[in-house]
Length: 117
Image 1 (cartoon, rainbow, N blue to C red):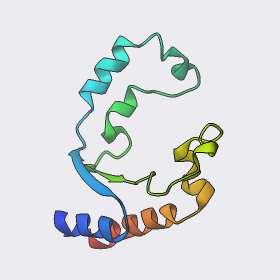
Image 2: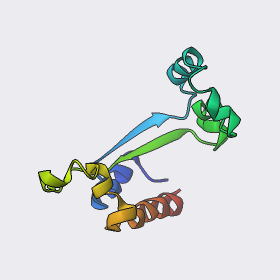
Image 3: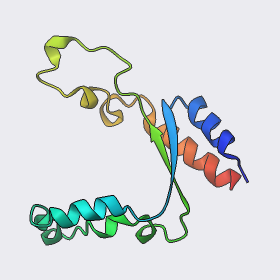
């Protein structure tokens, strides 16, 4: 079984800015927010999205115990200010656009986790 430190080191070797861990317990604070704003999000049910179900990670992965969050640094490059009104900065550095390898790094990270248990 791989250690937490090994997971952190792998994330950094793959050039992720940071990594965090949390439990796979239900997100009670999000449930409360959704309940308060039920009317605002009613349209999601109409298109088949169950936001309340999304507040419990075990609805997607029943065996989950831990959630690993990888952070990508979107602002590592500088863009000309004159372009900012026309394109969002995150969009300018989005892997779907730049194809600079974030998808490849995510796949490598998932493979590492699978291979090391």
